[in-house]
Amino acid sequence: MPLVFSVIVSAFRDLVRFKIAWIVIWPILLATVFWIFIGIIFKDQFYDLIFMALREIGIGEWLQNLKYDWIASAIVGLIDILVFIPFIVVTTLVITATFVMPALIKLVANRFYPDLKREHGGTIAGTIVNTIFASSIFILIWLITLPLWVAGIGFIVPFAAAAFMNQQLFRYDALSEHATKQEINTICAENRYSLWGLGLVTGMIQFVPFLNLLAPIFTALAFIHFGLEHLQRLRTGNRADVQSIGNE
Image (cartoon, rainbow, N blue to C red; front, side, top):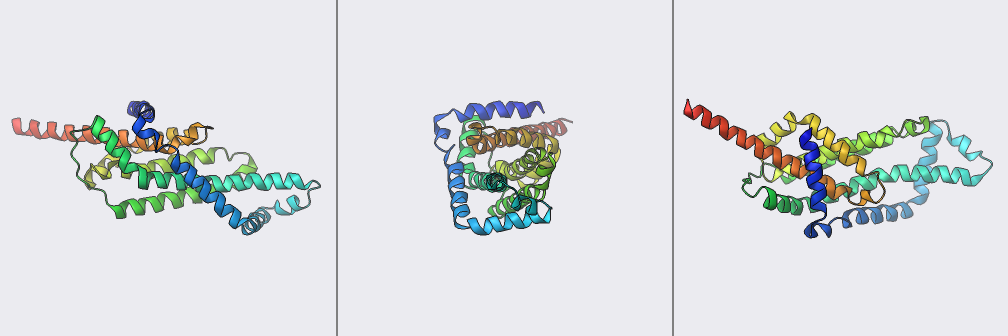
């Protein structure tokens, strides 16, 4: 876990670098504008789906019978936000992982790991499959657990979902350019809990106003540092083992 905090510090440090500043904002802005546009186009259909879901859990009729319409509108508006947030978050993270990650890996690797050999163990197909899996599970967790918000315990859902999404989405891409397939599997298997811890810490930032604008790039940087540092340690350990065997 100490390495988790170390890579968090490294990610914050990298955020202030000029070369990274220009790619901080555009993914989340693009994702937000896209889903606002979708929401406007399909507004009526979306409201119908919300009321259908609310009727299924027993509060749809209560909302329709409220004396003050603005209360019902406010509740439905809040549900709108709760539903659209995961779509915006997923879209932002996917944009970052797909289009921004290669540039970030290059910046971090050239500056901090210049001697780390690139083995290209990851593939485009692997990235696509991993992205689809991570996004689908994230959205499924969020939507299935929406009734927990009504019960008053929904506050735990975003953090659990974000922890899963971040570690699942970024651990593969962070290593895919430099590590072999075996090295990717080894690092992910041996650091399962640390990856979840890093996913949780970076996920919390997604829910802090203003800081959440930096969250996608910050998350990517943190996982890049985590992955490349572990890869460097793994290879150093393997070389030491080989030398030890050779000296026997």
